[in-house]
Image (tube, rainbow, N blue to C red; front, side, top):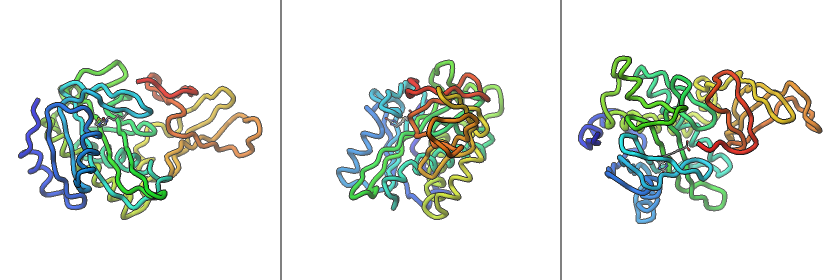
Length: 276
Ligand code: BTN
């Protein structure tokens, strides 16, 4: 499945006014995030986009590999938000919300699994990896990388969009149209963050979060997911006592637990990040 630059540009033309995308399309790259950093280091501007049909060294969250066989969408966008580094996770939350909302507007019921997964029918449709360059505590540049399963094969806990669309109507016709919707989604997420602020963004993110109300079992506590903080931590209201902690709510950092995919309403807490 080829990416068609003309088709992509046409799909973006009417709607892309905030980030002003400049497209760089490739067949195979190491990592679209890496290629975009290389371009930024030689003068590329925010709005620069790298899309590939295959990656040989795709990067996932928590230092994992992102398997990137042909048929998937692998895309990175450069942004320059005026954001303190401690709030960098807001870029991921904004992108997740924007993409899920955009795909929902196309009739595809995509939700979000905390913190950065796009989910469909309780399975993983895609993920987001945001990388930042920070000077004096401020983000000067950021690269938002998105991988979405389109026609590539996926593990049992994953789903690709084409298989779902075979059962239903085809709101997204091909990889180029998917790329356009993902870019417009990122744009609206970043625009929401920068113009309306983190509180409004988080409330929208929570509306699409599939984990709200999930029970989380820890080694020394049980709790219920009640939200996400503006730093991206999971807010869990505890139902059992934790040693010296008096507050009934605890904040879990991204990457410290895995909410899992097997049981949609009951999540198991692990002390090490998931390896998938
Ligand atoms: C995750 O671990 O869930 C996030 C995966 C993000 C993968 C994408 S694919 C495009 C971009 N380039 C990379 O090397 N990684 C991101």
